[in-house]
View (tube, rainbow, N blue to C red):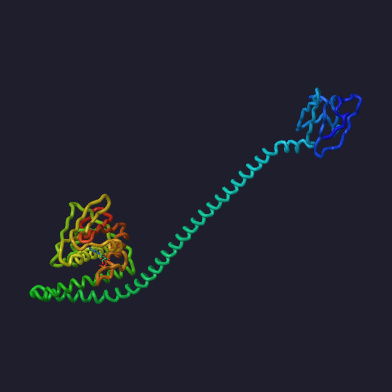
Length: 366
Ligand code: ADP
């Protein structure tokens, strides 16, 4: 600013201070003294003095006199902002940085969430596909089993009567020739054994194709086992041992169905011991059941056989049809019981049959 000589003299109280030229956005005032005293005002850009608000002061010494130059922004807010410009810039920068960080973090979170969701949905989809595959396989298997079942029922039905006739013929032959002629007796035994095996296969086929609900009545296990052993006597190289505890409660079973179960277990045991061995039948009392174990000293089973032996049509035998154990388990479960197997290769097999006991009755089948 350039002022005339007169402006640097002490103020003349009679002189009226008028607005000088404006300095853009600034108000400026010059005082002939060290303080912004209106009485000392020499020159100002406005009449609205003394200057207030955010302002800058500069004391100026001219000779012995002290003058004060005051400058302030015409709009206080802008002045205030201008004063704090570096801090404001820093704060704005920080704010922007925080906002950007928050935005980036939120985007990252959304991305992570989206990825997790995609993983989850993919896993769901894969699971559903696996279930669909399994269901489809089950349906195909069921359809196949149903078709085989129909065939089995037809074959079983057609074979049952001829087998019955053959059984009667063998019985008649035995009563006429068996006793006196060892050769004939031996041939008849073979015929009876093969007839029993064929009859069991037909019974398994029919039971598999048209399962029948059991008609349970109280029966003693030892009596049923004796019957089974007389229909399917052990081969010469096999010994059968039984162990019955005293006062064994009768079991509530369908007699024909349980005979079929025992026949399957016993003949399987014989077949597992082609070179001979021992079959042991042991019963055990339980609170509301009887547990029978049929164990042999035969070849035992590998892992796969142990896993699959109760599946219909699973067999490892060249002449087997693989229905015996599937049917046996179904019959036992229909009685409210259970049939399980334990075995190791080369260490024999043991089948455990649990059947509900019924209150004791008068020796029904002895
Ligand atoms: P099948 O006798 O016609 O093969 P099963 O359902 O009775 O049908 O038996 C299925 C399979 O279980 C047999 O082929 C055999 O491999 C196995 N198995 C059953 N009983 C025994 C046993 N006592 N010892 C060893 N393997 C056995």
